[in-house]
Length: 326
Image 1 (tube, rainbow, N blue to C red):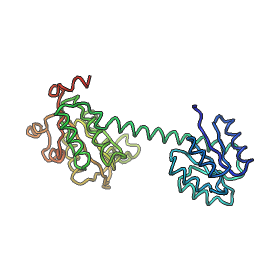
Image 2: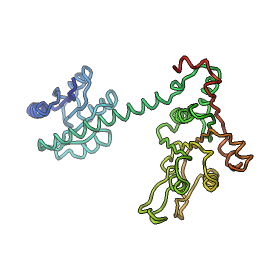
Image 3: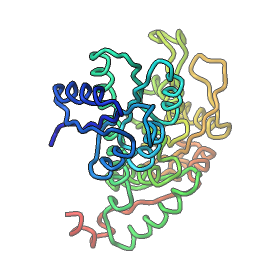
Image 4: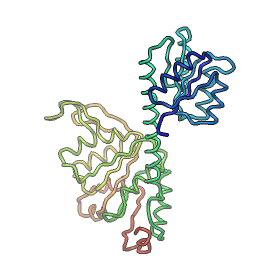
């Protein structure tokens, strides 16, 4: 049951038998079909990890079979077999979605390597798909636990916020789930396929924070042996999550404000302005209004961040959620 299942499709009996025997000896479960129509019947009956098919076949060509597989079983990897004279068709097949092609005559080792790489790619693709599903499950609204009125209000606001592009400020005491909410906003937004990049503003030394955020050019300071892209640049197209924004040093507040106003920045030691498209979510357990009044946080930056605020209630204010959390 753990073997990879492969379907060999070729109208030449000798080629079918050769490939079937060779792949069987490599430890694969192998079926064979004499043409494309017979292959379709097999595909209706079984699920295959890999199909190896000739291009030139009667009744149904390899390209037509490829089209069928891409439509009905897109998780199946397809390798084309071609004579040297039809290499151009094989290249067209790859453009349409085939993984690779093998040109007759071929060496056994060549087939083994291509098949091995194709199956490894399929497994990676499946893992990637499952990871994205898991992220979607983990950071969906369903993973935010609570049925209290306070949490229902939070869910409603998150759903509205996720559909927009405005900056969001998450406030609440430590442990109220601010980072989980930031993930939920990102993974329920149109940016979910793009990066979610978190940075804890209070955990990075002040002298390194600018380089972490905006990157640096080679030679811009001692130890800068190569160019480095900052987290803002890495988050292009996605979401930048600035946790503990209240800990941001005064100089970095100025630089962040300029970035939010212009939507562009320069790497440390750089002279070129770089434009990026990021959605900013910030979080704090501090009372930023009080910090602004005390002169510890810039008022203009606060208003740039506080476009929409999501205030997360502490558990003591939603005690009816304790049983389901337990």
